[in-house]
Image (cartoon, rainbow, N blue to C red; front, side, top):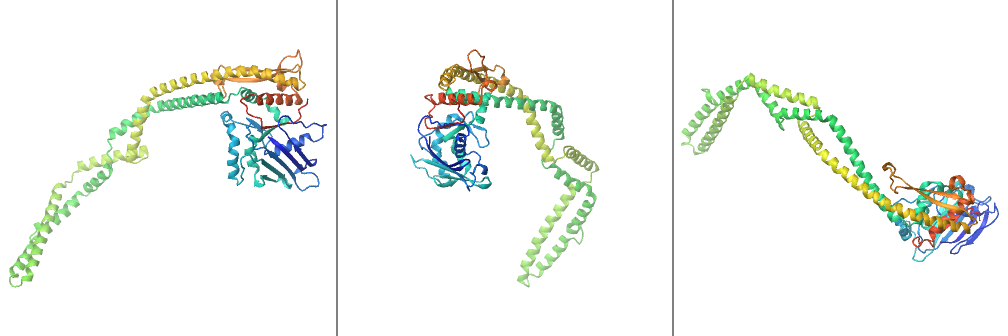
Length: 498
């Protein structure tokens, strides 16, 4: 709870000290006495936007200090934001709200601020010229951003502008769920809605893919057959190119190979014949010089090597045949491969990979019908689960609406609105298109301020003062719920006319 508030050089206030106590605290006074200024000062401690216009004339800064008890406080599902709107808690966040105060020491520690167990939290905000702000938490420098993070655990301000959001159906549904303590059920409905929606998305995507694939099916089947008929083998293009080079120069190669064979072996003065003659002469005189024997043996070995080389040249020559027919066959194959490469704007390796993709797509098309059927079955099952949870939530909301009606009317009597009839009217959507993560319900708060008058929506009948009192009544009955756990949460109401 907010225990103490110090305001200095803020708007019309020179210096003001206020101490608050548990329960209801009232600030009363005539119009223009500064009550709303005090409320706005609390808003600054909760992260609202400041302005240099708020500095009292003649002062160099405005200073607001708030002392909050460190007892566990529970955040509200919404509060006034820095831009004047209401910052809502997501549909899944309400269940986590009771743990937020326990996170405050950790958040403060990240900013270098220690908060011991049981220690008060002192928030200080200074407004400087040019709209600049300085923030201190327990006398340590901090930021407005940190105030906004801590604010939901500390309190909320309800001015008349913020209370206009109560006219919105979304805000009214949140109030009803808070009263009925339904966050767990709402969360489960949201989870089932998300699951159903995701499955619907998958079905839609698969249907679009199948439509596109159906349009492409004939083309893909033709391309698959064309590539298969080409019978591409990995690396064959290089082999065909090499054979083409050989066949294109076959006569020249044959001539050179034949000449080489003659020079090496077949001619009278071939290398083999010359080496043989030299070897015999060395062998003949080696008896006179023993050092010549190794030379003769080396020459014999070299002669054997040259003979082997000559035989290899002869074999190569025998295998080579200048065949115009074979050359034409090779060139036709290369031309076929080249046409494929130009058509698909890809290499042969890439064309083979594309063929694999085509095979996969066509297989998926065959299996797609079964997959689509299974997904549609999952969608139907998810829809039934959602409808079941949403129906349970609707039943709980209907009970909560009756209880809220009785409780609010009782509180309004205590706020000088005796005879006022309040009703939370639920409407259940039946069309699938109207399903939401919050369920199938919409709620509208209706009011009849005087006996005999018909019930009308708040936005069309309630004055600003009446809205303030209705908001006070709503927060009172919600806080009174056993599960609410809100005894230390600061609720600030502006312009509650009673």
